[in-house]
Length: 444
Image 1: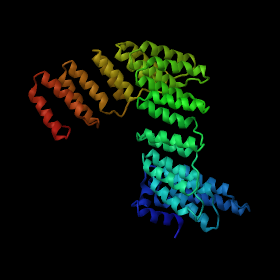
Image 2: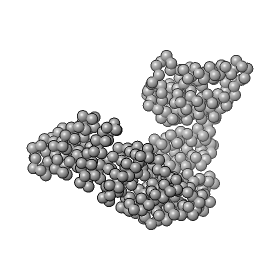
Image 3: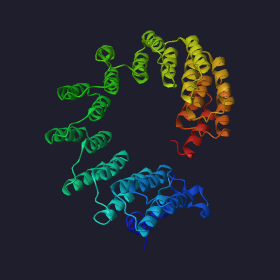
Image 4: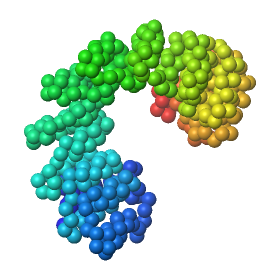
């Protein structure tokens, strides 16, 4: 029985239909290929190998690993496994790099369980597992928030005498952080230090980010102090994360201080740093400061290349009643070749409706429809609310029908907006009819 077949049989015990998962997984391309050409890339790899052999050049493991990696990078992991089987059948020997590549491939298609089974199969038979193999699976498990399983693998590798490195610890620290177990994450940092495994800037940044998101900026500063004591240099991510943390707890002056200190410490702010500051100032209604930073960005050749900066500014301008400036900036972003997203349109529509400029909002909404955006419920709700505020209830009901015609299903908020407006206008029968419809749809 071939290796990949044995692998599939063994995985079936704990993961039903593993082979069908490989064929139908959204992470792979197997489902889009007819059976007759399913192994084309596998055949191509074998063809390359045959040509090398015919020319009298016995391929080394580097060549074989390159062919395996090529298949895996294209998402064709099943073919890579078949190729592996054929190599073994022809008497070729593979090394740890080969198996680390295959494990990485299996993890990339989203099947960490299969990757673990793969690791079990090669252990002591085909190759000795190493830290890179374990790190790959631990990383995949953490990304799926399976942190207990990841920690179990970490314990297993330690028992086997495989030394964890900075990548192993940083990955686990990240895993504990994303599931909210900051105490365990900080505990691992202490273990690293005790074992003289030096945390790097990525390790510290993970912890600073997690603490800041929890509003624990003081604790984040303590981690930074440890970082500086260990002579690990902060980077732009460190400073940006801390700035974001200060804005979350409304300590604006401290955020400004960090932003200004960056340059003094020899770290150049990037677009993300400016975005944090601009968004932070807009949220506290300091749009003048945000606009000045925006101009500074342009002056320093940090051209905003995405929609985030513009969304923050347009939102700030709308909420402060500067609707004409918001429209001007909206048009300017389009002139600069930056395509507004549905969130940009929703921000502008909301500002115009709340500012009593329903006619302008209608024009913007019509522009949105002609651009063939895939609309969600939010822009429709904004327009429906705008109509209701102006007492145009028939238009609001028409908009609700239009959203359904366009394949967007109204939610509870949509119904609540219209029902409240109908009750305010003493159109109780229509309101009650909508209320019954809302109940029938399971929205109440």
